Amino acid sequence: MIEGYLDRESVRAGRPVVFHVSTDAAEFRVRFYRLGRELTFMAESGPYGGVAAAPPPHPDGVPEHASPAVDWKWPAYQHTVPEDWPPGIYLAHFIEGDERRARAVPLLDDSGIEGFGREFFVVRPARPGASGARILYKKSTFTRHAYNRADREDVQRAASLYDNPVYQEAGPDGPRGHRLSLHRPGGVIDLAYWDAPFLAWLERSGYAVDYCTDLDLHEEPGLLAPYRLLLSVGHDEYWSAAMREHVTRFVRGGGNVAFLSANTCWWRVHPVDGNTAFVSDTDHQAGAEYPHLPATDQWWPAPPDGVGAPENALTGVSFRNGGMWPGEWPGDRPREGYRVQHADHWVYEGTGLRDGSDGGPADALGAGTPLIGYECDGAAFARDAEGVAYATGVDGTPESFVILGIYLLDPVHEDFHHLKWGHWNCPVREPGITGPRAATMGIYTAGGTVFTAGTTDWPVVCGRELDPGVVRVTRNVLDRLSGPGPEPGPAPATAGR
Image (cartoon, rainbow, N blue to C red; front, side):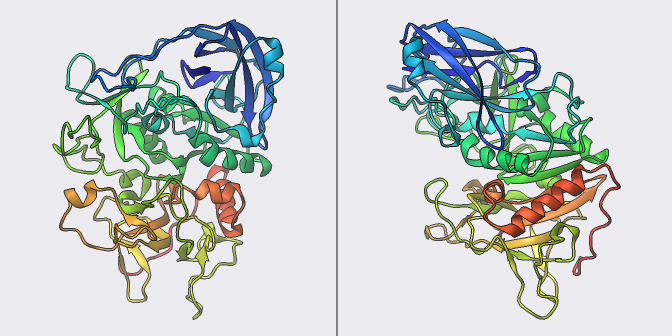
């Protein structure tokens, strides 16, 4: 038995990465890999003396479950990252046993990224921007921790923000809300699904990229300054106020963002305990009850029932106007793709896709692939006399936002053959809103330019090259928004505005 977690999920080249490990073996080793064009073995460290450590008990006495709220305080070990390790996302694989037993464990390949006894971390250049990369890839670590159940391969501890969470009232330990420690084990899941295929595609395509975590963006106001483009990838649900402030300022100053993600910036988090934990007042049950409704750390509702800063003011879209697949994750989904609008926009350059303005039917971007979902975001919209969807802005979406692709969501929650609309608390908070909801791909300019894919699985479809249109749109976005040249021109005029 062996499992562990990182003290911090990012480290600068030349500095030590610290990991905490529990094992019943007398010794163990750690193998390090880099995710890129392929999973590349970088080094093995150790041996280290093994110590078995117990998880902290759940404060509510939940049988056989550990606490998700406190630092597990397992023994600490470290490995100094060589200065010549390139920026990237790295995998630490914990190997139990003596050298003979370790030699019997084969090196991992791309099929071995997901699993227990593994953790990931970001290697950053010694100085921000020193690599010359114009693109900064943000790994959504707060969201990863929210869903991390702290399970082991043979034990289901079910300890997360969603499983047996711990709720606290406001006090010296932080604000009111569910408390979650970042110092817990749990293995690797989301990295293998969303990030790994897209990272491989980025490197195959020749893009130079630096990397950071949510915590890096939270702590460092000047982090974005050396870059032209910030990438948010996959599932990016939990944001701190500082994260939003730093990205908003970046965009206003001419920086660009590509949200190749969805369910983005849905909950606010408050880092505490020296940023080794966070608190968020969400709508998750603690025991048999909802501790506090409405949950005040939802971004879009007005105070006192929420933050009062709609996420679509930054992203252009919101899960409030989107939806999710109600079956198993990730599951199969409708494969109709995005109905193309404004096919003459530079985002569509070279795709050959049509929008119906030539008298023929409009094409669908990503048709035949599960592009829409697992979760998707949208903008409040109406249609002009020609049936073209445009953002109304009533939900906070910027005036310059142009809908480039749209997929209508079925409002029937019980039918598991359709994507369902929104989160359960959307109709609870807004019972009078019955307008259509749709996954929405779009773009706006407000100083810098913000592109949103409106779906969590964009990086999967692009990374696996399942649709040439999605790949070309991604290239167009990365090339234009990361380049040193002038900013994109004005958005096309939209009827009905």
